[in-house]
Image (cartoon, rainbow, N blue to C red; front, side, top):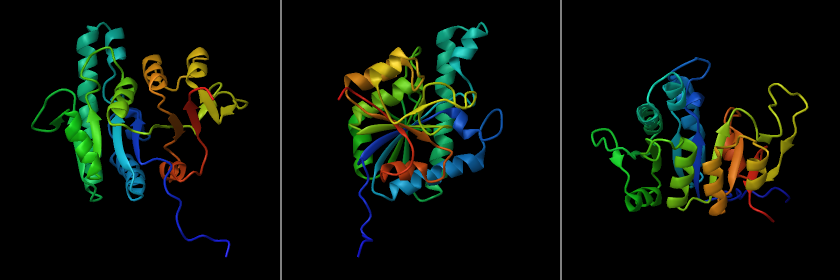
Length: 246
């Protein structure tokens, strides 16, 4: 028989899922859209059921963005701390959605707030992953001037993740905006240096450099495509891999 009933093992055993805060607001212009949060939680559930250990970092731009606050005259450090607190709110919303699906989840905050989240202790977080709990890392790195992209790359390295999955609205990395240019070309594979040199906007430069220095692949895929997260891990679907030379 040609049909093999044995499912393919996932490409990776432990991954970091990075999504923007805007991904949680659905068609709204601001805040949280609970049905969208639940939809993303189901995507995470489908990967969790494959036996993959999952870390998450969620941005805070649907609630507050530090750069925009500082551009409007707010002191940058204060604005960045406010942005970090926004990521905690998003993390708690995602935790609630995941636990509604019977997935044990821990929110781990880089800024101590013991009543709502665990403090970041690396070895404890690793143990959660080993016990198949989803770990959502909140409050960025705990420091101003660093984005959640950089926080995701830092935590992915600390947790020994095998890849970062960057969920976006498009199915990979393009040489220009596919929303405005119908002739935009999608890359199947692109190097870290090409991303930096061509300003492809996958993540900020600090995050790309940190991933490059630790040879941590970044997989860019569409979070809006149902089953996309699971599909990529099963070796299917459309995505772009950011990698080193060779």
